[in-house]
Length: 300
Ligand code: FES
Image (cartoon, rainbow, N blue to C red; front, side):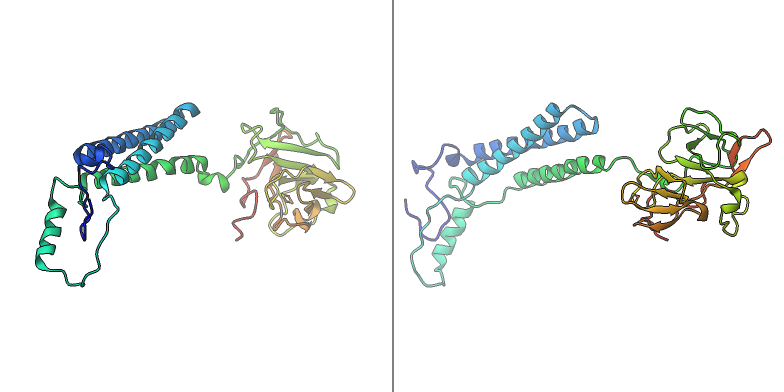
């Protein structure tokens, strides 16, 4: 059947699929597909939040995408106007009877016509909203826990006793000049954020910065072990030159002069921990670090 000027098709046209002749049934199929898609995506979000295993996540996501895709396809195939449509050349001004016929065709429930389908549109909106929300879950969870104050504070505080990774307290006569050991505040053994290098140097060789006169008792100096460039552990000590070397990008820090960088990309000194020796000979911190440890991305 050939129509002119009307976006309609003959329901009896043998080229039409069964559902195209029955738009109500097609609407129900599309709506059911969208609802299944919404449920699958919501289930994916819940499963992701509960850290379910990959087969569940993959199954729900695949089911949701398949159902939505099926619904879109069915909508386009069975509910949209079907061609071919042909329109004879004519003057732009349509005669009144033709306009009336077109209007009648639009609202004619017996024909496949362009019509508003608010229920399907709403379902589509819900599906899109849920898909958008659940897609954010992996992104948010992959960012890991919030650092909160951990970037600005450490386990060191006033009076913390310096201990080894195994918890053995350090006494003032434990290291010879030239000795070095990694220490932690008592109770935080093994903490990456708190790891600190304790180095003993000749007392007279230290270049004391104003305000740090008491920070290095008996030649003991303590610096954060976390490189201020990219956070690698600064583990190599050259006793001859009194320098600490970061193996990642070869930054060198002057141990005798407040761990100032003398070579490499490190932008600031290793933070120094103020030390004191208590009456029993144990080395303790006078306070926590006064500046943040680690990479200097917060350049101040
Ligand atoms: S991390 Fe130490 S120099 Fe780059």
